[in-house]
Length: 271
Length: 271
DNA sequence: TTGCTCCTCACGTCACGTGAGGTGGC
DNA sequence: TTGCTCCTCACGTCACGTGAGGTGGC
Image (cartoon, rainbow over all chains, first blue to last red; front, top):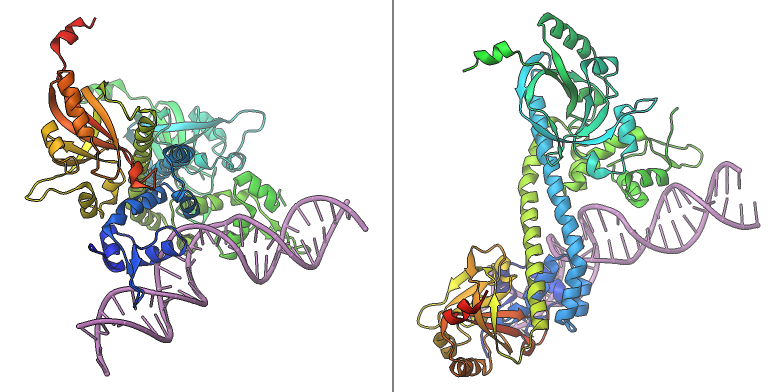
């Protein structure tokens, strides 16, 4: 008789917990090579490693234990190919979901940090890099939606919702007129096919629930007037802090970016 | 008072099962907006969607319900960033595992199909494309390992094991001498950095447990002699059917590929 | 009275993990 | 006698799902 391993040794060799090995025996998934007749100890053998590999490989593919049991004694290449085909879709979906969640986490981390580091009482002119976004919907019709109405309408689409929400106003005038109802609702989505242009922006902040921006539109207008700026492009309202990181909507932090004209004179001054 | 939704309506809006909503209320994770005082029905509101988004976003990141409960009323950007940082590693590992499993499934599917379509009693000359592999270990020393010994020694490395095992003999002579103990053990790993060369191969098959090839080495030698072939390269023994798709080791199917010299005369004849 | 939606509460499920109490051989 | 490894068996865990029995308003 060749070498045989105790449950502890076999557990160490394979990385599978003793409790799991006992459970797998109970449900008939994987049985020890033999039992010691006097003390009833389990004995495993290295000859069983291929049999174990069958079990762990299918486990890893999220095939239920019950199914593995059922096909164990009847497995054929045809059957396993069919099983794989069934599970391919499932795995693919999981893979997509997981990478999506990872993106959500990363972009939210980034925005939260920006919020923490921002001087939220000041207005400033910043050169901002391009940022991928995706358009959720155009906000048109007789009654323009607010952020909350938009969120309510698209609640089903959880994939979209989990990326931070933002608004897009076509001009500073549109923003000033109705800060809470942008012309487009967008998502800060790193895989989005649209872009927030790399450009010079006048940047301000406001705190409050979705759509509430306090007096920031007045302060922005005054700043533009005083500094003789030329706001040219759209206005982005980007929620850096939202329900994910604070309970009280009064603490939501929104960044307002107004694209401005880069004065040619300043440009020339640069090296 | 504005519009309020029944549990069924809210479930439909959000895609979350009624039973889950009830469970989440039980553990204090997510509470309805109000209750009807007479019949005790739950009422939900669209105003709750951000609060729900907080819960589902963290759920999606595999944060335990208990943890979500605990931080719900104390969440701050700092805390959430810390939580994300903790989970980033976890998610990354999952992502890696999942894509690995997908690869395992795909390559196994491919090999199983090849096994099903092969005429296993015939020898043939085939032009085979390059195939990515990875070297598991060199098989050297006084006593050369068999496949089973190798599998036993590397059992802990489940990631490696789940790819199909193959052998690499440096020459047809080495293979004939000891078919069950190759010079290298390799994995059929689509992301491997090594390669089975694209070339013309003499291909045969054998059935049986790891290392058992019956008389195929004799048949290969005879074929080479009769057809005046020049075996130049290594010999690959690739398990197309193994423990994953059949219980009885007698049914394992191994493909033997002997790289042969492509006669220049034949080459010139091609268009 | 009949449907209908909702309610509570207990128990089931899946794949284990834990812990109590006991055994065999050095 | 003391450790040590192993045993069985019952119960716990996590995040729900299911199903029985009952209620309120049309």
